[in-house]
Image 1 (tube, rainbow, N blue to C red):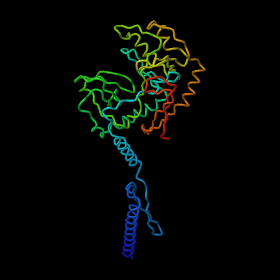
Image 2: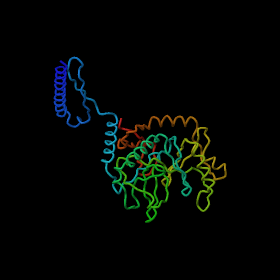
Image 3: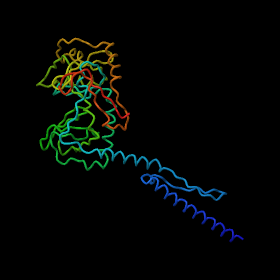
Image 4: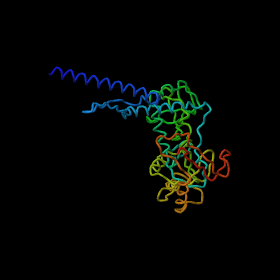
Length: 346
């Protein structure tokens, strides 16, 4: 009868339901014992056979959104656990500051009319700059970084702050109660800011291993025409316009007073220094030209061999080590043949 069929179906359903429940419970217990740290990362479901009456347990990893969230939290934890740098921490100088006989490729990131300087980022380090900027923004834009807010500004300390809404590593050069002077070490740009309008956060060790990515430079063999000891506005504008045409071949001459004296050439071998002199913005003195198309190609080949930097977006900066390949130690301030940067993470 219909009632017997219904009862039979209800009994079969209950049996299957109980079977699935028991099987799932037992499997949970077994996997939890075998994988105590990861079993929560799985989702559970059952599939019943249409005719055989069997119940199969299906185990899947949690969906991709959950996996991404776990990866996000894990990376936050990894960065945060590195700890805050010590109060006596100082950014390492860029090793290219000490390369006086190798031509390399770079971009002019900034012009300082008061110091008569330009700041150059080596092309081979641009991937590091991109990764550093992304990971700084990733961590310091998250609410977890609120605990790192600096409430008392002091001079002589490394910090993190924003420039044009992007987080950068900074160094507080001066503090005058209501105002302070800061340098963005990877742009080598200095500005005075009002303390109550800028937020500083403590620098974590995770971001501290890379050297300053911008190199203070001056154009070799020229003297700018100055106005009250400053680069004229016309010269400043000309330099800013010219720097947009990079990258440039950087021919280092020597290191002087913490800056690298250089000659810059574009891809057509036009000399940046000569252009400034030719426009009547600076005076020139004799300096032999050593760069030719053959030396450019040779230097590029040497650079490819000697500089091996990973572009991985998950690079651990502690894996970067600067190897001194020069004949004299850079700590003495003397120039050497070259400094090799290798990524040992691979």
